[in-house]
Amino acid sequence: MRTWIAEWLTGLGRITLLSQEAIASCLTFKFSRRDLLYQIYFIGVKSQSVVLVTGAFTGMVLAAQTYFQFHKVKMDTATLAVVSVSMCSELGPVLTALMVAGRVGAAIAAEIGTMRVTEQIDALRTLATHPTDYLVVPRLIAANIALPMLTIESMFIGIASSYIVGVFLLGIEPTYAYWNMLKYSHNSDVMIGLIKSVVYGGIIALIGCYKGLSCNVGAEGVGRATTEAVVYASITILICNFFLTLLLEKICVILGL
Amino acid sequence: MIEVRDLKKSFGVQPILEGVGFRIENGESVVIIGRSGGGKSVLLKHIIGLLQPDAGEVWVEGENITRMNERQLLRVREKFGMVFQGAALFDSMSVAGNVAFPLERKKKYTSGEIAKRVAAALEMVDLPGTEKKNPAELSGGMRKRVGLARAIVYEPRIVLYDEPTTGLDPIVSDSIDKLIIRVRDQLKVTSIVVTHDMRSARRVGNHVLMLHEKKIYANCTPENLFASQDPVVRQFIDGVADEKPLF
Image 1: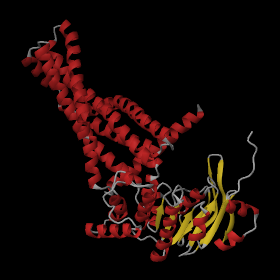
Image 2: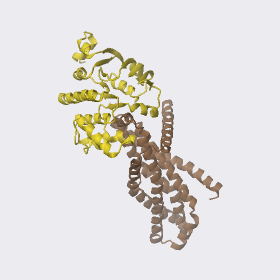
Image 3: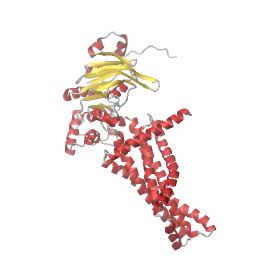
Image 4: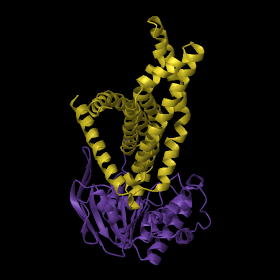
């Protein structure tokens, strides 16, 4: 038990140091623009299909389930409002981040882990290149840029598909449903979702890079690093989501948004 | 000049080096020999700051690199080139991309200059025209030669070789040895070669350090080493294993 706590605290300390090093490196622009563009393409463009399918079906099932419950109390036209607020402030950012953590977090940990096992990280260091500048920073910035964009897509497709299911399949009155949706969804919901997605982008990239950079030697080491990157990133996202929701809602109340 | 003073290193509870010390002058060609798993590669990685010792110091050209952080070490490492045991080529890049990598990171060369230097480095390691190939398409010996081209393309003053001939047939090993000698003589670099290939040690080095029982056991010229009658040295040179019962 004591060893486990010690390891956990050591890991937490190391990832904090990695974050500090990465942020300092971001500010000095030591990364390559070409690598950054490639990472935006890999994290953003290549994740679109997964994120769109997830967003669409989540929106659809949420619309159906909300309708089934609201129909009992004759509140059918509030269905899209519930979907819209949930997609913008909770489900859009969280599900997008979880899907990207599965796809990209694993890929980052596997790639960097393999580089470590085959001494490519040591080779980088001997070639006077800091692994944080070359490997971590482009992925971190790219994830911070790509995640909000993917989240916007997820929000849009989720709400659009819930409209189609609600109006054409379940027979909700479209005008009132649309009007209620606009009435109860605020700019602050979208803002909360986007701020969350930036934070989740950072979590995915940093945990993926950290797990890759600290992976043990051998095929098992890379496998374990990959699994742990996905598991830890997903858990951190879900825990952060709870606290971010409370914090951001409070800030919105204080600012009167 | 490189000086290692009373270096100690353990991994967990396993001691690897216990008080290693030596000095290498500029332009020397030093071979570090010793048994597999004896800490030769660990020692080499301390010289370039890839590992930090538990105790002791490493001095490179008048600077103590032992307590430097990673960013300070980057400046010191510009003086070094290192060839890894498994070549450690970046598999996401072509041969040209690998060799050009250190030049592109420096951002002071035009693409034309980089291409010219890459071609010259590949010519030097007898691999002209392989720029567009992927590291996966190359044989073990070719990979090591590309690793060497990458290590010398920015003209370092010290080149470290981690088991350059391990796993290669005698003819390819011979070509790598000749390459190390050519690089040493043409570029006037200090060479440090870690090996357990005695033929290679005799040919490449003008100084031999033998690591035994976590310490430097012998520090002499190759001629003196091969003429030595010391039982430990003799056993290593002749490659005689201790007799052990099967069960």
